[in-house]
Image (tube, rainbow, N blue to C red):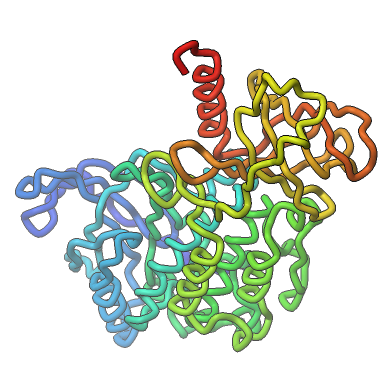
Length: 426
């Protein structure tokens, strides 16, 4: 059962000026755990967010000390993927407030996943690395988030970079919780709570390993489109990836996510610092992640993934028509085949797959195609039509791009190549 604090009605702060500095203008949101207002700070000439925490039970002095200590710890965090806290203070009624950057123009990870269901591997890893880095700084400062979930991950485009992550509500689960029975209890979500935290019942505060588990739940959900566990599952259940995820998600990525979701905290990365290092090591092994590591044209995959196809294999294609692009593809049975793309109509590619004789209509294949501007496009495609070549031999096929974040880059490169080929001055 998810325990939440009982909401105590408090007067609105709209129209008030806090500490002679912050003109409160609008209530943005409220919940049992906080109220968030938009305020204007004239000397900074900017809007800020004011987050007001509920008042702990009067008469419990150690709870108030806990609130102050943890808010001070959170305010010292400075990672670029952590929401900035400019100041903290106390209202006249004793409630604590935080002055934070006001985020706009983006969406929560929950909203993103609701719109797109599952995310491509490259995009998921890009988001994960940022979450781990931000939480890693907190763990180094002995701050545990305790309430990591997609609703507390904000995604936006910043300074030309796609999918910039801002982790929200650092330490707030501890701030609004208490070891005492009564009105206040931790508000971390059951779905992302580690098994050992479930077993503690009333004291639901986690540690660094519990944060790692929550990040594992987020990773699984980004990759598969569903949480690793259902509400009726035992807290000790072992997650498994569905076949469609096994096909498109590399084994080393799946292994790391399973490790993060280990029932025994000792089997997980010990904290987000270690997790961040593991994700960075994986990044360097795999090459840069397509489309999400730098602004502008994506740079990534290992060039060895996309070697040219020998001319002898351009079956059924006139020599006067060279391929517009060449790369490699991973087939449903795990085998790697060569790929040549000769043209496209909309999202449908006209291609030859060398070694794709085992494929059939409806199969999903993963393609890595070098881009002339550098790097490569990682895309998925569904075989819509194919000729009847012998098993194991070259296949001419129509491949429809699906769930492909790099489709724009690939189609743009194909269009440029087609125009260059058609130009008499080329």
